[in-house]
Length: 342
Image 1 (cartoon, helix red, strand yellow):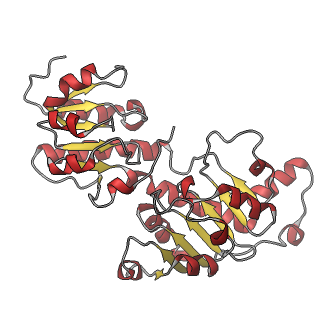
Image 2 (spheres, rainbow, N blue to C red):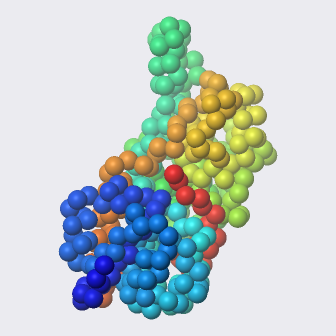
Image 3 (cartoon, one colour):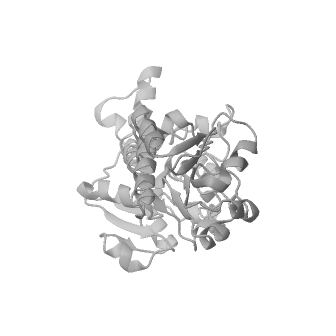
């Protein structure tokens, strides 16, 4: 593969994503027109990657990049994660010290996840999928008799755990519902939250004061099992819990115990083990809306990743700063404890 052209070299190894899932034919053509693309999606091993690494202007994907390997990437300007999670397989301090921009595509999923979260909350409020199942089984009840535990999302108290891309996108969608929204995010000063119309609150207040709770927090060493048994016990009787963020944030054994006891209702899109075992007790609970990790992974979101990559690499090749991808913060990126979504 000849990379002697004057065009900047881009190494494409998008795993666990796939090239054709995130790049439309038009976006991929634009990438090839502007850059010398070394496509390694179907190239096993590291020989080709390491051969072209010293020439690379950017890497699309997140292969293992320790300090020694990064030292060989003398021309590298950008490491672009196209999966949505920053993994602990990169020496981020070394990357930043060499002036490499670490960029992520998490914002591409935010609207899709926000809309799905809102849909799950409305389902929990009105029992839509529950009554669909009842009708299919021939056990439905009609009119008010099927609405004994239904509630309105309108003017309900809402809690949001985590106020990054997902939390902010959801908050915007909730505006027509005129909710009182409490937000727990220890990485943000209260003023940032209050400027968006939310109420900055601690974890206990957010959980105990909210009829609807959305879990949108990222996985870090500090947030592991943030929702353990005592935290879940703070939820109101009959509360609606929407889990669309990282499974590591929740103690699923404690969650199961409280759902079996009928303490509250839950919609769950992320699981500690995926696929969920066929004999999982969660499958048989009537107060749970089950979802197989599908909130963000829609075609429009995937295609927006490729478009963001092309746009920002084009800017960087012109000596300008990226504007569409999200720059990782040196102080935070090493704290994430994310696993690839397969």
